Image 1: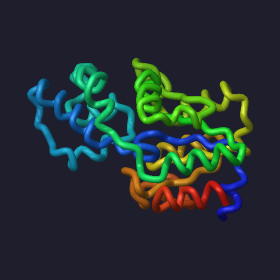
Image 2: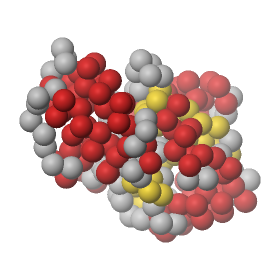
Image 3: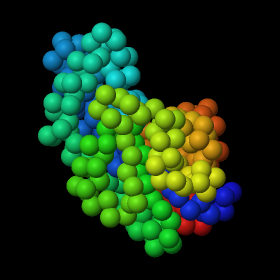
Image 4: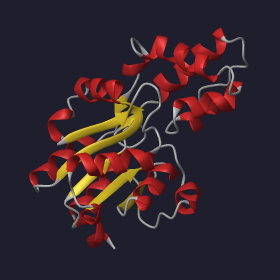
Length: 218
């Protein structure tokens, strides 16, 4: 099974929960927004489920559809200056990317986070140098669905879906890959668990960045 992944020429990585651990920033910014909406404020641990899905849908679940756009606006008030960098790269990820790059693979990031934030995070952590392209949503939510995002990324890059794989930690990543004819590798060190990923059709898993390296490099 490892061979089917290690032979893929193009690798698309999710960002949150796959390359970096964004928990302090994302959950802290949600708490900030909820406080200003006078809504109940869960703990950071209780908000882990918000890491990965589109932001608007998270706030719809937290405060309802009517207040959700206001929640997103308040979230971004803090995220753009502070929360963006309350984040850290998982140990071993730069080495995974460097080795894959040295093997001649084309590497991309495909995140449901707005592209303007994705690019700043990757630049901040000096990961851009490993990538052939970066894809994210628009601030209005366009392409926040991984099915749409990966379809757009494949079109823009011109790469063959059958020669490509997606690496991510949530069920939405797996569904997005499947809908676009891509292989998928689920990582278990992020914020989606094995049942969620299996329900989305995942059959291949990496327990850690070290295990991820074994899958990708063969």
